[in-house]
Length: 255
Image (tube, rainbow, N blue to C red):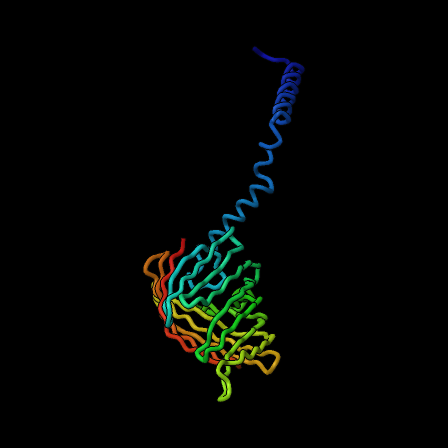
């Protein structure tokens, strides 16, 4: 059937009206699927993928882990990720020494609050509260090659307690010393092979009540699988309250 020009115009208008009516009839929720909620989900998935690609030794990695270590005594540790930016951390040793904290990942650093109790070789018990984190130098635009370098920083409140005994006393007298201090250091990891990684770091702290301290550690980690890692390291801590030297081995599984 041959349509006259006027009839073609009428049919064309009817088609346009039908298409417009169908578009308006589509539910708003269906048209919004490609909007902000979907973009947020894509960003979350991308962030989770970035975390999975980080090395097991990376202190800015948000992941759920569980592990055990031995450095003079047995201890267990773990972390639980809540989304791609937040995690809880914890550790407890056979002697009762412990630490507990939480970490939040920012665009240029990871920030951690932690509380813990430890005992030095001199018998002094320390209770510490700290707020700090790690800054990857790569985030600052610095090219470090195969070395991944981080700057640990923060503030720590330290409370120590030691029993001191003289010749005329049957029991020790508790002497309490406290200090507010800030710390700054460097931490680095470098893959040596596909499975073997070098880890090393040190930090210096300075605070009130003539408090000062130095901590250093180094070792090697070996990746048994993509989720399982064993490591051996040595650490040395010395500060106004005493000193602590440890040789240890550890195992960690990432979920």
